[in-house]
Image 1 (cartoon, rainbow, N blue to C red):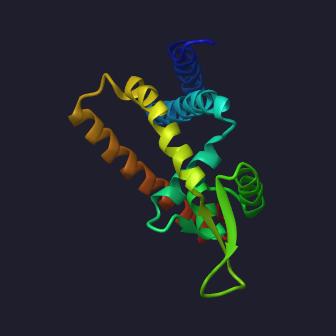
Image 2 (tube, rainbow, N blue to C red):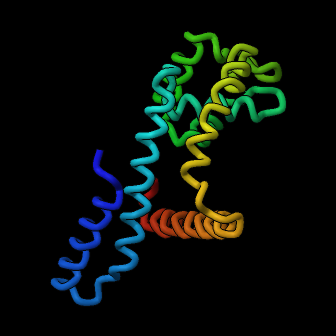
Length: 179
């Protein structure tokens, strides 16, 4: 697999060439946007590689971790869709896969029988408790050469950027467009 530094240098050179054709192009912003996408894709590839031996994908892991984070281990399909950024049909597929492995259950709500609830099973909770620590070394390699101050600053900047992304969608919703 080609190192990210090679991809990045090719990308920067390409943006430099295009900027010569388009005076006023915000080169630094283009580079930053592409860097975020490139790093995100490579990290998602690595996460998929780490999860594959466990027959799990990222959306399934997020679903399980979210359920484990709930005091009662239960959530609604709609809430899970929002947390995982998955469609209802994908969440149904994810739910079926995790139910098939005995990691979650689907059950009617205690207060409204028309409502479906998704809950993590004891087996699912144990699975997450065994799996998540195996991811720690990857995270430590990813962020290991950052100081605590750099990590805090990166966290603040990414949250600020997330707010800017939200503003893009708020502007689009006024135009009849949305996510």
